[in-house]
Length: 337
Image (cartoon, rainbow, N blue to C red):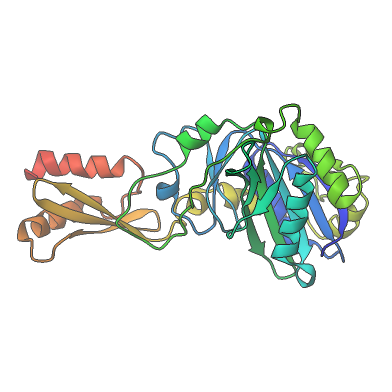
């Protein structure tokens, strides 16, 4: 069971800032104990490392989408969702013990918690018979440390959550799909609780102290040579990180986690079925681009001829939600689909 060397509330301007900060801690932390972090993000969708962007994100979603380094499913963040992170040395890491710690700490808020088979945390509803998901979790293994983090729905906009999650139907896909579950906000059970109060209560329960505050904005917005200024007076982190991480490390991670190549193009290869009348063709997408267009049935010569014509125009096209409509429209207009 980990002990926490420090507890911190991190103020970050955007999800890539926070994902990059976690990445640095996973790579460079050399303490004997774990680190506990709390943070909130502006409205955004965060998909898992091995997920298909277009399968997880709704075509109508208008908020930013990012991909984290850890596995697991897609989640919605806003100012009513609290994120927690544990940076744990690998030799101390235990998924079950850490989940139990967090579930027990959440139960101290006055709710009954239950850990699901996939590492989710559920709470019992007022009727005592039904339960709903309040926290989803994921992990990322580094050489020296494990990132074990999760969400905690407090007063999140569940209408927007449902509107932004759930993408297009795919024919063939090797990604890790999200598993639907009924979500609930803590305020439905404990209306008086606020995000700030919950951060303090969880920090006291888990780390035995109030969290220190870290603002990353001054680091990102200035050309500081080291992290030391951003973490001044924070003792335990400063001693281990300031001398080993320079600005270029953070900037490299931040650029990586903000890139289209990471967010969209990293989606595993997948296929989409296009059909009209009696002709069906398959779009194969790899590396975020249309890689092949084939007839769904090999002996359908009409579809094969159509696919061959479409290939000459669309192979290598950057895939997005409107690509299917575009190819279908061209097929209708130019090739008498």
